[in-house]
Image (tube, rainbow, N blue to C red):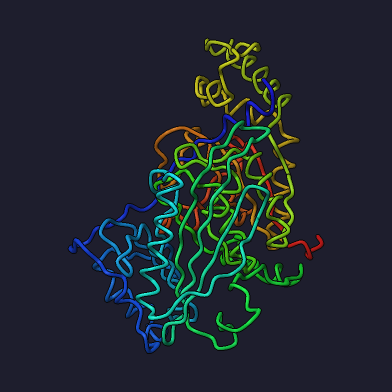
Amino acid sequence: MTTKRFLLALILCLAGGAASLAGPYDFLALDTLVDPSGGTWQTSSDTFLGEYGPYGFVWESSAQDTARLARPGMTFAGLPVVEALARFQDLRLAELTFSLYNRGDEKELSQEKFNDLVASADAKISAWAGSRAVEFPEEDRTDFITVRRKAWVAGANRLDLAWSFTAKHNDPSLGPIPFRCEYVRLRVTPFDPAQDPRRLFQAPIINKTQMLTILDLRRRVQHLPNGDVLIDTVPMVDQGPKGYCAAAVTERVLRYFGADVDQNDIAQAANTTAANGTSPRAMMAALRQIGSEFHVQVNVLHEFKDNDFDRLIQDYNRLARPAHRDPVSLNVAGSESVLDVVQGMDFDLYKQARARREAARDDFQANVKQSIDNGIPVVWSVVLGIVDETPPIHGFGGHMRLIIGYNDFTHQILYTDTWGAGHELKRMPLSDAWAITFGLYTIVPENVHL
């Protein structure tokens, strides 16, 4: 089996996030969130959730810095809204983001319908703002990915509309890619005269990663009395019910470094599908493509390769025969993936087989410790369903999550999932963590030298 076949097989991200809440109301005009005089931006987090919690807004994490709502019946300026995010800074509302369309949550649109949606958004937001939009130059993120932006000023508010599509092309790994509509997204922020889009030569508001040093990142690491060594400031992103674990994980890391990015941008670059997620190799290739835009570099710490798979089968078969279990064929059928083979194994024997590779496990532990000690979260590619987890995971498949800490006293790995509140900090024995590991990666600001 080739490494490429394995990586393309490891794409099923289990989506177990918080359910969308419809609340007691059938319709919600999100226009009511935006006060033309600017009162919106004085709203406290407690006041916001007290008023809009009944509609279904819930905190994405215990940090209470982002509230999310995804339910039918939402509109802004008469435009249907798929998802709404309210971001807070210093306990005050700082930004509202409304997803008018994204490929992960809705069926794909034809190019004609996508253009109609953008035109409708332009007209209706212009009417709502009482002014025409300022259009920014077209951005070509790659040869095939195009992003376009417009902005309005409405009283004390600035509205930025961004939409993107992927042109028809042939991908060397995935084959022909048709024209694909990606997203239409509206962002509302306080109006800053210094960034008035109506002034000449103004650019759209796009925040890059902060100019951090290794000392800045190390200061973010908590050393707690219970032995936890923990990065507890990684923002939560809820992927929702789509297979965007890799894209959501990447958004979390980039936001941790201060970048303003959305999982839909990353999913577009990585050719992520809502049902099947993203292969680790596609994710890393996409990150390298946009690395210059966000000033980051991607490092591979560990990847499960062909020879690792061969050794795993050999170790497993040595244990299977005396345990009266069926051995696994070394000549795996061409249509079978690594996940298919692993799923057919006895999981207790599988864990024992993985434990035999002590040197590789020690390297895994050392890589995690070094990264966490330097304040860098670790992107963790795993197979779910092999070991017990808390809260329980139901199902089997590939997944991406973040390692954000470790505890040498309890021999645990500390990690987090992109499934919203309740998944901010979880623990797993080191032996179990190694057993399910298929890849480790870091995303690091390019100016940080380890």
